[in-house]
Length: 371
Image (cartoon, rainbow, N blue to C red; front, side, top):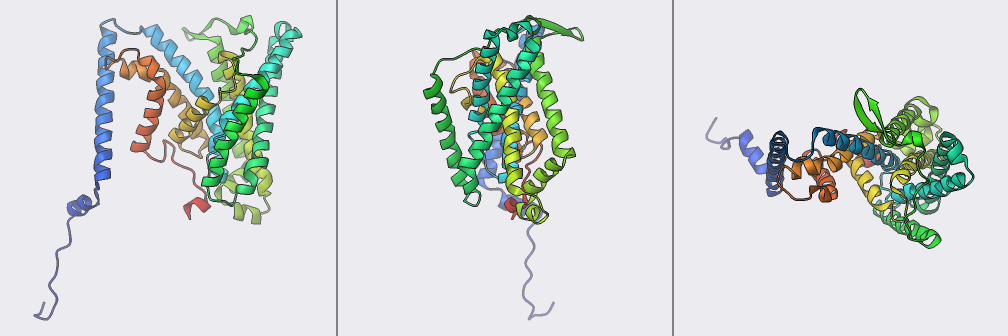
């Protein structure tokens, strides 16, 4: 070094660079993370202490809550698949998907009532339930395709905010169309056949047959969808369009038809969930709103655009909603924690986004969104 050389400045240390990058937002998020972990740990310890002292739910009640939560989560997962598939292909959230679910449940109710009045529901309940399921799936599939054709197709090249707002408008339009056509009365499906009532022992654990039906049907539907997406030519075309629509078109894939197929498959999954949900809880014009929002939450939990993540996110959301209030809030000494199940469900979404913003399985983003 000579007298004419410029003075050297010492490079900032790793700690100094990290400290400069740590903004007040990062500090706030870390406070939230640490506080959430401490609060959850406190609630778990309190619940364990209450359980060992003989207070709160018994072991059998916890088991029933767990099974019911998995069954409810399976329905959320089936609805969430539609959100994830549409997002993976078009890159926007279809908030009208809850009403696609509602329409299948509603028309499935009319089909079940007609079969019951004709005596088939009582004489051959399995055939009647399968026919009702097909009607529900066909209705939701038709509604999903109709919404895509009428509301979304012309907006594909628009900024993503425009189809998002359009989907909200379509959601309200469908809600109040069903209100005007069928009224606000909550309607119930015909009584479940005798073989679907009561409990069945599985490895010594009594499980309600209706809940077992939901879990089995959801598992079969998810397995069939996975085989369809990964093993068929149409499924490969859907994945190609989700990755890059322009390149897929150059490879000879009919992009319009593939997008319609995506909406149709998502609608069919929502129709399955609609029939199961309506069979257990009844149908009304507003029934699609809250399950639809929670299914979107499940899709984000698992990783938006990832099909297995949607199903896993649905089951996790069902567990958060069904077991979380008693397990965490009950341990904190909060009265009537079950009434806060919706707050717990959406709080779980916030925590997952704070700890892992891309969801548990990561986010599937196409080439257009990465650019």
